[in-house]
Length: 334
Image: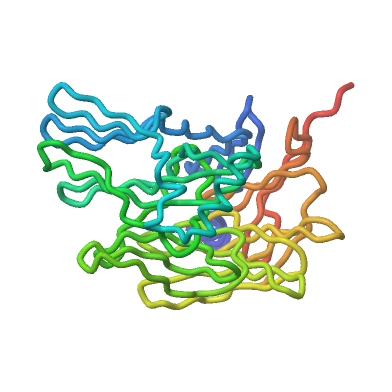
């Protein structure tokens, strides 16, 4: 083999295949050699569950649009837990009187609105039931237990966590198991942290981790990404590790921010008066996004397209320094 041929052969081996991005029907297709990533313009939204069901033998504890239902033998009992909002077990007298007044005004209801989460531990089913006011804002969450081992099971009010979870859906999944306790990430006034219930101690507790929480996304285990709003107008984002009771700040920006997802490297969408930007929280590299755009992460890089609906331009970026790896433009009409 001649020297020229050898150099050409080595160059062919060392040069990676070209990366391309194309729009095909409702997907962007990124290709590099035999590798292919498909990025849908619209993500399929998961269907919310219609019910949560716990069963042991012929005993059932179910939460659905009717409320909490307990079925055993040939008996079925369904309740919207109207007793709880005025229960002296969890409220003082003046609090109950205030709630009764708000109910008369139509601002609150005695009937439960939603389920913030549910878990089963052995033969016990736990339901974190939520009450929303007339504006759709939660004002009460109560922890209820149903023993599936009892011959005539009934729901039992255990109490309420310190603070409120960030649950919003009619049937949400915010109740977790952590170190043998039932736990939620909760806001207690300006503070936020881990609010928990120990079934062995029959006691509630709270471990503060920060202030000004506006968003929290669970990751593996009882950890996740948080976003806080400070009193001086900035937003702080980072990772919370409840196992170690430690928080790691990743970035602080003026304006609002939201993490793109929970994958590494952490990418944050930053919204400020001057526009929207995408920042790599690990390298600090930042790029400005078009006024109307959408962003998706792929195994080949980060795809950005504009406009978000019916795109005419798209780019594939390397997120470390936001280098353009490939681009696409819609064909122009003749």
